Amino acid sequence: MAYVGSGFHPLSHPSRRMTREMLQREQDDAIIRTTGYHRRDYGMSVVHVWPSDHSKVRSSILTSSIVSRAGLGDLDRLPVELLLQALRQMDMQALFDLRRVNLRARQIVDSLKEYKAAVSYGLTAYCALLRMKLAAHVTLLDFYRVLCSQDCTFCGKFGGFVFLPTWIRCCFECIEEDPETRMVTVAEVRRLFRLTRAEVGRQRSFQALPGIYTTGLYSMEKSYQRGRVKLVPYFPAMKEFGDRLDTSAARSQHQPFWDPIHNFMASCELPYYDPRARTVEYGISCAGCERSIAGQAPGQAPSRATTAPWDRVFSRDNFLKHFKICAHAQKLWASSPEGVLEAIIKRDVSQY
Ligand SMILES: [Zn+2]
Ligand SMILES: [Zn+2]
Image (cartoon, rainbow, N blue to C red; front, side, top):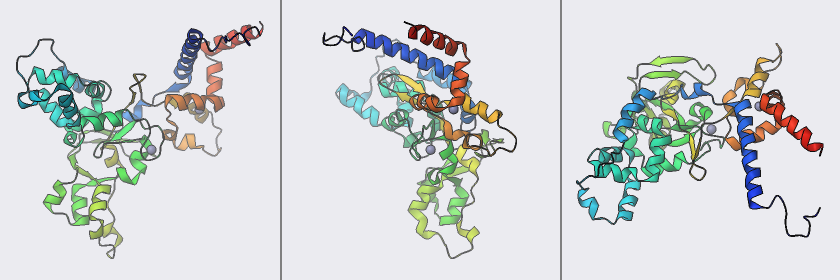
């Protein structure tokens, strides 16, 4: 090739490399559109805030362009950088309250990139924290850090959800399966650990929101809950008061009564926000694997994809890796108009 030794390589030229990357990205997008999809039913099985409720909050988070004369009192004496740093350390309830003080407070809070990202991409989780009175436990920096993390804290797979009482990112499976997301009623935790009212008050308990929740991963049946039940995470209580458990008593006396639906009443969908690319990801499932389940012969041993579809929710990058080894997804792509076009282009290029 003439390029060798000339110091010029076609693929290393910045503009060509950019064009190649753009074309690759377009093709990846097309593959995801054709062979991937987002499981909306998972998000509808946990704490869910309807768009109509969002609009009520949205109206209160809009910043007017009118310049406010009222200041922030003592806070205004701080240098701006220090003030912004202090706001980042404030909890989400305090920021919500501060924004209601006056227009200047709104403008200064809204100027924070972390706050903008939180209300743009994590509004459902923010509304849930406020309504469940858990927002005082989560600082803006905590909120942003979890929003910008991709993997489930417990199993390392893509985590499109957040466990609200302790603000930990998790996947749909770990909402039910991980011991740290286990929820019990306040009455149950009081009985088990013989807690005083003050000790109960220190736990992150909340009144569950009314709504439709799944009763469990394996049943995926839905149940309407009126939301009067008061719940508390079991794991922190166990860590603090575990020595009070009377393990010599009958098993029913020291084993908590646990209903998986309570875990789903404490979790909510939270997309992953990539601050560098400025993109959000909700998790991608494989339509190819889904079709293979539908086409499974009667009597054939069920695959993991059949029994645990939540196990295969991917990030964008991992979905594209999965696509390379998933014959079902490749078949789906090859039969799509864009896949057919790709095959024609490849054939034509190989002829020259
Ligand atoms: Zn997980
Ligand atoms: Zn697949």
